[in-house]
Length: 561
Image 1: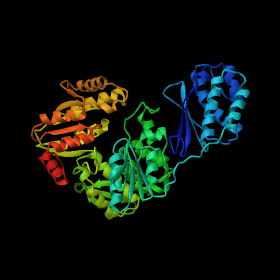
Image 2: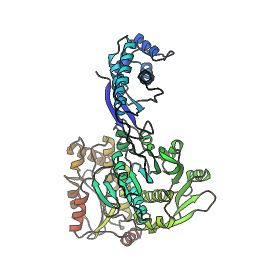
Image 3: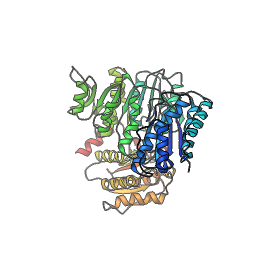
Image 4: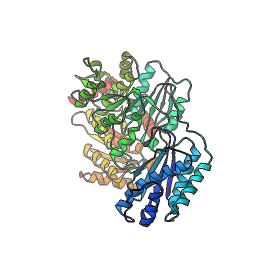
């Protein structure tokens, strides 16, 4: 068995270091099982004079292996000509595998060191540790250096947005406000690369290549980068720093992938974004999310927190320490700083994306975007105008809480890709439903979620709606079968006593079936991931129209009557 499971080159700031790094996944079964005498010989050779390796296969041996591998990398690096190498070693959910990371300045030589040390571990239980060490160090020393990191140092202000939910909406709103300011804005996201509002390249560019492509455009004056978990873990962040960072929230999503198994681990990944914010910049953090608020301990930048609760102790604490806060007081978006009364910017009723304050998530997104744009130095009146003119429609915010009038019913289209997103969708559906009318939900899930999360989506959807239909996402099965996803969603729904569910091959077919069942005043919601454009075309063909702010306000008032 080879020790080297994976070698990955991280091109920029990452979970382990604020600069380019090599990440190795190693199988340490060999080191865990070598005779104690061999482990002691290795420990002595690499300078761990007081090591206690323990017996093969024991918990003591596993902990010794973590320490020994870190020292082994440093020893080989030193003999190979690299002094004072920083090495981080972490356990994984598999007790036989560990992650090793170290910064690199020369791509080829850094990779060669990873391979050389892995082969050294493969050669154990050889007792000739000196020869193994010498061979590995010589290999590193004689390797071609290779190219240097190409991590970008931004030439224009950068706003970096991350979080589990809301990062696309928030980054779109920030870009809209910056364009309202008259700037040419480059924006990278899960939808593609946009320059001055025009899509220049479609695709998922939430990783390092997206930031690079945005900053490569000479005309760009402000860059907004949506930074997803996968990009940070697989490639690192494509820029060395940002001027303003935003963390919207952290909740269970994509767990069980790339070594991230808990929400706390996911929060650590997201914290990479504010960790590289300039010292004189601002880190915009959600004060209502304890994991996000806790990122204050790892940032160098000044904290700017936001909360829907003006009495939040976190707001008082941050403001008292010289930071800033954005909140809602008497229905107004307000900014608060030490030594002054809160400054009312705009009424929530005049911010269309909040749906008259109905959508809690979009209220938070608006608070985050207002904070970030003010932190960037955009004038107050421009920020207010941007908040007032950004609408929850396919033109401004496609696929995110878009409301339409189709005949006498309302259709709500949203990504809703996890538990929090689905709860937010149901909240909005309920907020525009007239008394006595029904909620009909097009339910679905992508395949790269854990079984319990998919089941939970079925449970939440069935519990919160009157009629449920499953609309499958054929292009997002990601290793699962339709039947498997169907069964998991139905299992969740059955927990709350809902078994009468029809399944459809596509999201569009589920929507069509639900609209056909809808009666005047009913609200149809669709979890739409795969067929957004087809859904918009179908709605238009049925005579449906996006709801403007006046129509939305009227629906909210009717629902409350």
